[in-house]
Length: 207
Image 1 (tube, rainbow, N blue to C red):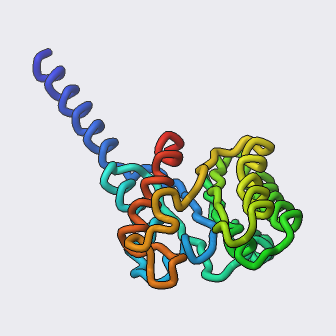
Image 2: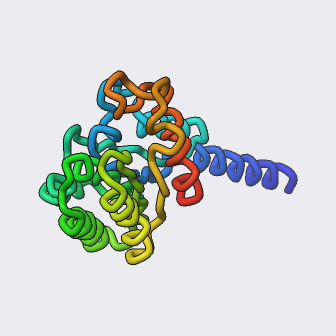
């Protein structure tokens, strides 16, 4: 009797060990954006999506970051390639577009429509995906009327679509010379780490 119990306990222990070392199904976080996500001017490992991946790995969570950022991309560009990007399964989709629209003074109605179309495409392809919208702001040189209306695009879209919102992606980075590259627009490695903090506050509860 004792031998049988010992054998059974050994089998249970072995099964538990095997189960513990089974690879967990991997989920995907897609960062869909412009040069900010792409990490313009810094090493790929220094971009904020890569910093996020390192944090996820340190916590041994079964998530893989997919960086779908393209430098110079506008919301219209993103709308044109969203179907191709969504060939990769999306469990969390971080939408980081619109900054180039604002810097070019593109009409806000077009930016809003493009971002909405991207959100709609994600919902249609992956209804269970959680969407995070990264808010952006324009410098005062664009004029108060335009900058205020531009800033309001993102909370409005987030509320309408029940998306999580990063209020301002470049919070504590934008306009601070020591955290940006010489162009004054793109974060340097230290800036990207702070951007990763801004993203992580919203992303972590969804993992």
